[in-house]
Image 1 (spheres, one colour):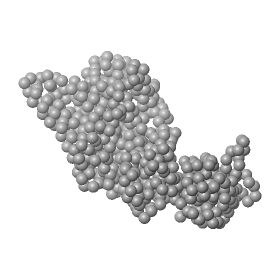
Image 2 (cartoon, one colour):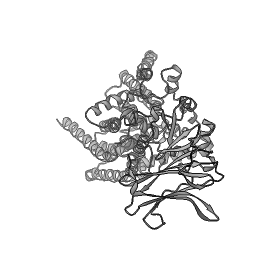
Image 3 (cartoon, helix red, strand yellow):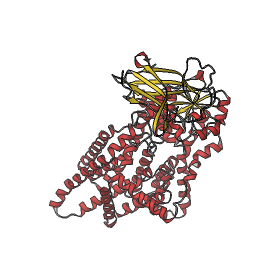
Image 4 (cartoon, one colour):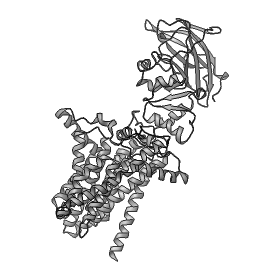
Amino acid sequence: MRRVWERQRAAVLLVVTLVILLTVYRSTLLTQISGGRDASGEISPYMDDVGEMQVALNVWGTIHHTGYPLFAILGNLITSVLRGIGMDAATAPAIYAMLWGLAALAGFYAILNRLTGRAEIAAGCTLLLGLARSIWIHNVIAEVYSMSLAISALLLAIALWPTPKIGRGRVFLLALVGGVGVAHHRLIALLAPGLLLAVWPVLRSEGRRLVATVVMAVVIGLIGFLPYVYLPLRARAGADWVYGDPSTLEGFWHEFSGAEAAFLMQPPAGVDGLISDFADTLAIIGTELTPVLALVCVAGCVVALIGKPFRREMVIAVTCVLPTFLYLIVQHRVVMPQATAMPIVMVMLFGAGLGAATIYNALQTVSIKRWMPLLAAGLVVVGGVSMIGMSGAFITGLTHDPTGVQMIALASHVPREGGQAVLWLPWGPNYTAVAFSKYVTKTNADLNIVTHKADVQALTAQGKQLFTSKDVLYRFGLDYWDGQFGRVYLSSAADDVVALRREPLTADNTKDTIAVTDGIVLRTVSLCTTSDTIHVTAAWGAIQTPSKNLSVFVHLLDAESPVPLAQADSSSPVYGWYPTTRWSAGEVVYDNYTLPRMANGTRIAIGMYEQVNGTFENYGTTITQVGEALPCN
């Protein structure tokens, strides 16, 4: 009867722990297409591939190397179910990944509770594990690493689960789950030394059956690779989203082997590099747990190693993750180190739990034992609050980044050119955000999109018109596009959208144009308004090739004063990317600007300027009345 009560109590504590974590996770859950950026605006390694997952798991697509086929198959199934009950397409893949994360936490709780017999210790350590930064992140975004941790936790539980006798069945079960794990992510193979240590007594007792047992285990392990048939099947079926070309043997091997990342597999640059990577690994662990909690966990591991009750279990657990720790030092940048360190964090908290149980069991004084649970609970609360304070805002910034939504809006403004428009974006979060709107939500279903690997020459030969985002030109500037086209001609096609042409837009007629200077004219200016913005479109022209580079001023003015209320000046036309000295005779260059709408802002002044002897010289100033603007479509 007591045993039944203890099991029920343990189950309740697990549920309570997971509910607390879900409450924390709720405000940080990814519920929109990933923007891929952190608060600084830089692409985050945590979010780099999340948009790809959100697309692939909605359209039965395939994922980048090494394919993650089982994750993709199960993800598409569960995403379909979640969408069928009303969940939106952006959130469903994140919930799927969260289910793996919850499974990892449940497995961790189960083995720690089983070994210590202390559900409170298991609950406290599980709560802290769920709040570790990378584990928290991967439980609220669509990524493969929550499944990796779930498999790692299951392997640890299988290896350490106490039974009267350890037989061949455990070897084969580890082989099966391990094969699934390695097929999912190759780094799970680094757990092998610890797993072998756990079943070494069985292997040693096999005698002449050892070879047969090992061969059988290998065969069982290979079962985990069967889902790889998904990649060529989906490619040959013409799936909307296929990474690479797994339909061919060469393409399949390229993805299966992760050859695309081979260039990253470089050792550190000498002793200084090793020291730097070692220090960064320690810093990552400190960020995952907070430095104080990390030290507490190390102390717990030491206690567990010294004490007799859990020494074997602690040795096996440490042996499981020691290769991962060494890998982080010698191959620090091949796989995101924060994700790679997740099993280490798990074992550190596992050791903290075993250490706490060792101390509790060793205490003889009843009065001290009575207070220890309260002390431990206090430490868990303080640690948990510290971890939330350290990571909560950071994670919220990742999952609420609006860049992806903004990219979809940008794509919707790309002129369709009768079906000939192609939006060119480098592979990454911006591309996958637009792909989500094309293949999943269908809001941009009529827009062709390509990555930086596309054959630009072939596209233009087919009569396609290329467009890109203005921000792309920071990475792929005029020199790059001159190399693609021979010479590139730019023009703004919509807000933040740049048209890339092999030949310039031209017009000979200069009637009704406004002379600016140096052979430049202003052909037209038009305005449209929304509730809070004014959109300005200018068409510049070149009677001859200008001899100097001019800047553009766009000012919002009140009815009388020349002092701007707001401005959208640019160092050069087309978002600063197209100097006037590149313009050819007869060329027409379109330009778009956005200003805030203000109650007293009644006029728009636009023209060009240059600095002469430290002063600004304006040319071709043209005034347009805001009140004459039409609503933007």
